[in-house]
Amino acid sequence: MANLSKLKIQIKLVKNIQKITGAMELVATSKLKKISKRIGDINQYLSNVYDVFNYIVLNTENSIYLKKEDVEIKKTLWVIVSSNLGLCGGYNSNIFKLINDKIKPWDQVFAIGNKSINYCKSKKISVKKEISNIDVDFNADQASYIASDLLAWYTQNEIDAIKIVYTKFINNILFEPLILDIFPIIKTDSVTNKEDILLEPDAETVMETSVLLYLNTIIFGAILESQVSEQASRRISMEAANKNGKDQIKTLSILYNRKRQETITQEISEIVGGANAQNKK
Image (tube, rainbow, N blue to C red; front, side):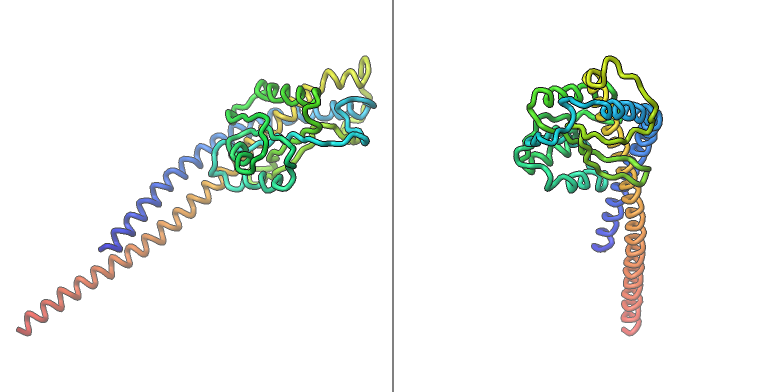
């Protein structure tokens, strides 16, 4: 009976865990639907901002935001976007694997999410600022606060370069960690719309006045993509956990019934054996 009791407890524990993972899967699915709609609504806007700013960059000859060949990059600020909670598969670990050997001892980190804060503490990486209140309701105002800090640190020469590490959302089952260079900007002929745009009074002035909007757009887009990737990863993980739980319950139930049958058979054999012994007397 001891083995049967243990198996019964195991089945109950697995069922309780399955209730939790099932609830988490439903929550993640709900959040995924909510934020996926937001991604769909703003994708065209983000694309247009990138195209226009890239056109401005292409026509700018001299700016503190452009990469210069003779200027050495010494201190880099890494903006690391992670989750606040776990149980989201390889979402966080893939980000940390990507940057594990890239952050130099003199670099600093802007940690977004509890997991990146804990990562920096464990690796003894200098954290310039940390934020842990980011969720699926992340908005443009929050992005502008982050962008303002980044722009101020860069223009005041506190840092020489800014990179953002986030998870790019491809579809509901595919997402990948990426490192995006923000500053200094490398000029590339990547403008999709080649029509002439009149820049008044000149490209350099337009860049100076629009760079904050551009930075705000990058931060907003990157964190939003990270949020939808996190929820997609958590949904997949919880779905797999539920399936594993069902399989385990099935295996344990078969084992329980087999043990129970063995116990019943043994008890019947003992009763029959006892009865036969009594008859022989």
